[in-house]
Image (cartoon, rainbow, N blue to C red; front, side, top):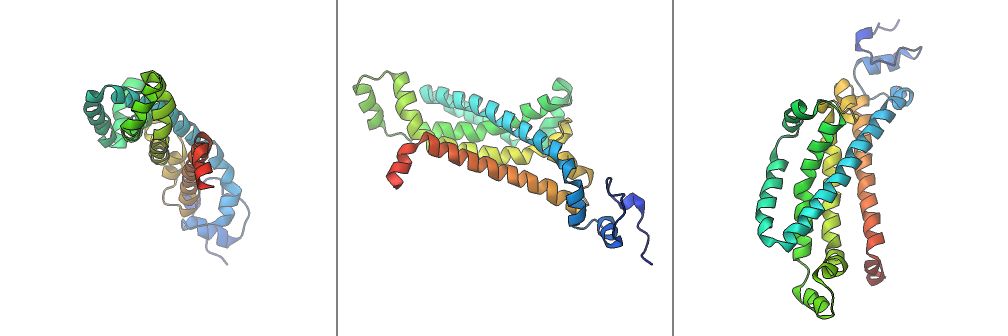
Length: 240
């Protein structure tokens, strides 16, 4: 006879007829492929919730940080203060920031997105500012000598030449945001972090939820690399 497994130790969704070894694996919190196959659908909604939080936060964060980077490039004296502000935001512990925002914005996606946007600012802003600053001055002078206005020089010459640095910052920000979004459940926003926390001692649950987060980070990294290739065809030509 097989030993009886306490029902309280068996994760929700596993109460079906099966081999006692499967039940024993789950009761011990092990890695149980049969449980993963039968319960994978429970991760679909949290995964897309995670995608939403990450995607919206990255999009908003990039627009704000890019605009601040352009502003700091035109008004160099703003670089120091803006770097200081974005650095302070980045150093605030993530859970603390979620909890600090709760009285102001309430539980839900809004609080999570505000916090995640704040964490993207330092990475993207610094890369935008550094990328623009590294454009050779003689190229800028030559562009203006050809009759381009300062704005045309910025958009047609400086920004394209700074794209590698800018997109490198976006790649780092994407991976960072995927990781921080796992803590969004503290703000009541759900995501894969809520699934991890619900059964953190169950290896199968942690492996699936954590693996999906890693897969999302990898997919975003590949997407930014593809965007870089599309926006900079001249680099493909040089490589060829």
